[in-house]
Amino acid sequence: MFYLNVNEDMILSTFERKHATELYVLIERNREHLSKWLSFAVYTNNIEDTIAFIDKSQKRYIDNNGFWAGIWYKQQLVGAIGYLYIDWKANKTEIGYWLAEEFQGKGCITIATQQLLNYAFKTLKLNKVEINVAKKNVKSLQIPKRLGFVEEGVIRDYEYLQGRYHDRIVHGLLRKEWENQK
Image 1: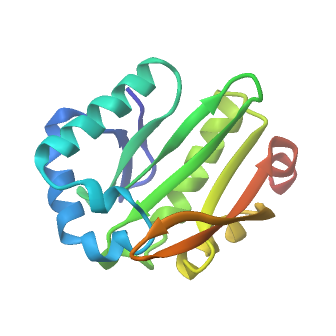
Image 2: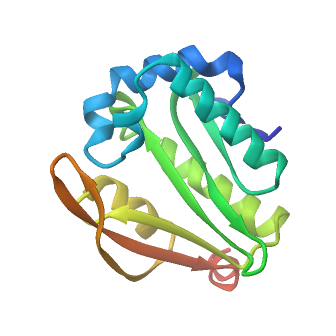
Image 3: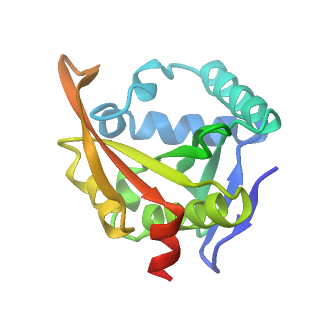
């Protein structure tokens, strides 16, 4: 499984069934916050939904087609990050992430995303990483900007949440751009 000891405060690790209750409680506590921008919070209604998500994520990891990892900050689960898929023909992936509201502003997502970028380019040898963010999700939009991504375009009416359509901004970072940042 994927496990990364990022620093003295943070660990990234793929979800296992033993994390189901902790993950479900975190989602439940942050449902209103998360459902503004992400559909999974609306459809995660019980522990069985969380177990099904973990099983699906483990299968994707085994199939070498992405995964979701928990973000543990000071030994507490605070969010999740992962590769939504891996397109081996195009050598690219997309990173998705979310964080509990009370842990925003501590740099957790920026640090975790940087770690997944390093892994994608160094270990997986991918050529491109994308991050797609709802156009009005101001806090989340700061992550790709902070990490040197290029805004590539807008997908209009990408998702229907909370009674309205949301546009998504597509951001991309190429390996050569990432290398030039070093």
